[in-house]
Image (tube, one colour):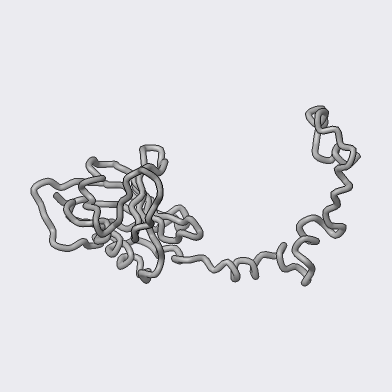
Length: 188
């Protein structure tokens, strides 16, 4: 059987990849096909998740054996056949391509073609540019005006020029907080 997966991103509106792969291929083969279709290097601890209809993660397939201590069965990409865990059209998966940023491609098994086989996975449709694989947090912070405005301390910008003072809350009756109409009432 040939599985046709559609990949979408919630970061890039016009991004789409369609990948065909044999149902007897491994998740490692699918992982490599995805990386090739988006031109990402293979240097992250990526993983797949089998999800329910509401995109709730249920089963994880990792790149490497994580040596988990739980009694749950663990799956690795190289040892897990796609057809063993993915069996019906419209089944949802997530592919975590940036584990530190918890960024994913949303995947759906869009079609199953019975009576066909293919030797290698292939990208059949490529629309739009893929999101950057790994976010550079230092670069993001340098572009954040709150964190860097005027060379002042981050805490001063966040809490205001006076900073945060624990004494502002001394004597506050937390039992009556529901009677207040706004957060400003805390300081009146």
